[in-house]
Image: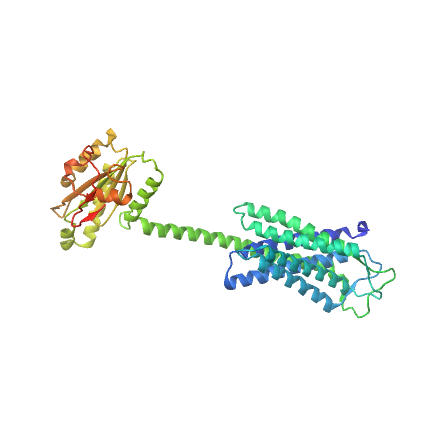
Length: 428
């Protein structure tokens, strides 16, 4: 019997179902991250697209049915069938897009969606009011309801699954899912058509106000145009979301830079140093990767700051930064710990090629001056894990003053139970 159907209209009904399913899937997954007024807009859009698509597929499929007389439909019942499809789609999308959906809410959403599809289908069939009552085939009727429930459950499960899919796979998964959903929707529709047949000789009611000529290809074209607009909206939304993600990533980088990078020199600041040390310690639970900290502080910085202009002090900090960079090998890590202090982190600190660096650091008093005034340096050093196994202890141990000529000599470096810092008393 299905071989007698108009193949072009059957194909059109499936194409409409695919487009509706694909667009609805996107709108449904978009609901997962939307909040407030934005969520309301996506919910309304998804309901209209999904409900209208399924409704259009139904009437295009009905026009494919072979009949000896022109079709016509009751306007009110036809409109109510559309309302049923839209409301059911909205209820299902609203439930399924929640952060957590248990078995009961999921089943409720699937049954609500299936009920809307069944009501829409059979109300649409009754909208084709005829001179004789239809003949109902209970077996096909039951089968169509079962298909509607299973198709609705599968569609909603797919929506839930797509929440976890990321990257370029999303589009592919949505397209395949749309093909499956469209096949299920068409399967329910054409099964329902077999359950609802009119006796031979039946003719449309004279007061049917909607010509069947508008419910075939013209309706399919109008629906495809609507769905095309919805698809354009989704493409634009994808582009805007990607642009937003890029802006957020850039903002996160900027915030991270503000939090972990010194504004003037571009070196890691105190927070950046501490985070780097914490990361190093976390990667070395067995305490096998030894490294040294060298702390360099301009002891007379406050005196210099009292008579130098701010821009001169900034230039001094840059000069110190650039000078230390010249001394350091590529494997060294340099941070600006405070306005007056810098910290150097050296892995494998006993390497022979560090000799030049240590010699220059011991002579740093003779290297840099500002406005003809010398800089008085205070220096210290610590070794992991000998002087401490935490970032706090390592930094505090490095801040203990030592003569400059001891920089780079680690044979006398020992762990101190109590550390006395310049101007402070404290325990490690």
